Image 1 (spheres, rainbow, N blue to C red):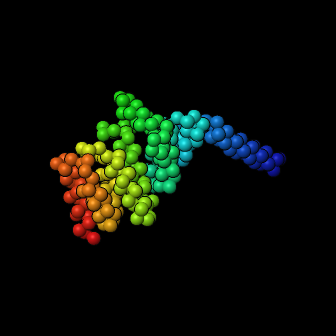
Image 2: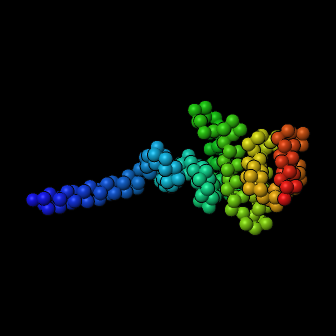
Image 3: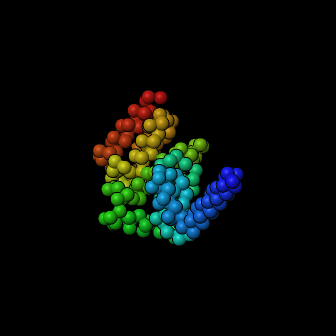
Amino acid sequence: MKKIILKTALITFGVTIVLAISLFGIVSFCAPASMMRFCESIGLENISGDYAYQEYQNTKKLDYLAHSFEIAADHGSYSVADERFEELYGESGSERRQEFAEYCAQQDNSALNEKVPDFGYRAYLCGQAATVKYHLALTDDEKSAVCDFAIGETAEALSEDSPVISLAVACIDNKDGDFCSLLLGKVEGERKFLKENAHYQNLVKFLEEAVNEQ
């Protein structure tokens, strides 16, 4: 009798596990947005980013693509983050680049959107992207391109969270004197920046200090 009860319990347990796995798979496939929120609620943010990307693939809503990029960037998944940013950012002159600009403007105008920083959502995303690209850059051309990207996405009057400053913080924190020297040269050679701007002056000062510490 005990063997029968034990066997029945094991069979019941096995069936329960199979059903649970099946249900998990079904929900993951059919409702990735729900899985995204569930994973976030239990601290599995990296996995939630993958579900956000899956939801983007289903709906083509940029909210989910941007969210998946932010999570990948925050968790150091640089290759994944870079791929998702490029998909979000699009090529110069493309319809996607225009969609990206409009999306960021919409986020700035959303008073209820707590994730939008005071200095602008586009600057925030591009600052993260510049940091991601910095960590991936291996060749001189790639490093130069990272600097050009950050400078190109930075306004004439720098704010403390401009993309070029985000990039500077990354290379200074990494004690990367060679990259700091490269970025310093490009910053000082950029005509659009207002030299009297306090943030510009501090940027140059800190980059110079990092170079001199080599």
